[in-house]
Amino acid sequence: MKTRDIVVGGLLTGLSIMIPLVLAGTPLMVQIPPFFTATIAAHVPTLLAMAVSPGVAAMVAIGSGIGFILKVSPIVGARAFTHIIFALVGAYYYKKGLSYNKILLFTAPIHGLFESLIVLPFGWNLKQAFLACGLGTIVHHLVDGVIAVVIYQALLKASFLRQKSI
Image (cartoon, rainbow, N blue to C red; front, side, top):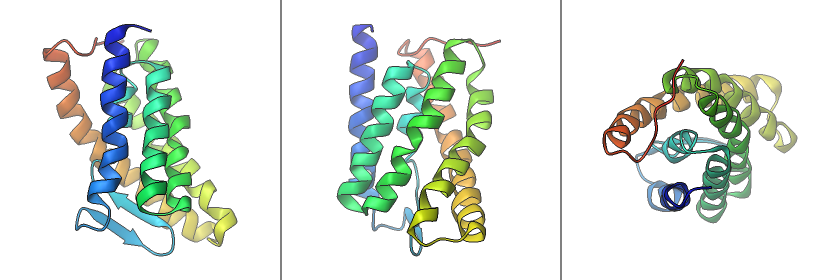
């Protein structure tokens, strides 16, 4: 791994931990009891990390899980730890040359599926899990994806990321 990737990964991991610590409990966090939350921009560091490398994407997703466990709850943290799955898939396809925008769209349903599955053992039925948590997560992923695209374009111009597209 390149030094630049480690530095960018460290910065993104720090952000992924800080976002829930700073924004949880503010109007930027939507809560649907018992386990669904949507904190605006919480996915942005992980979405950006997919354009760095699979290792960085996984590290940033772990940071997000840690942040949500520390500030919100172990179940919301467990949902955040599932980000490792969509982050690794997205980073793999980015490395293979798929465009960033396509990756954001492709990973949204993967993200929603795994966040839905993680709440099932904690009392959510299938309807609640897939409608509230799954669809809510997909919408949240897409909103954060718009933010990530703006930042991604700026990072490309600043040469912090390398564009790969087919």
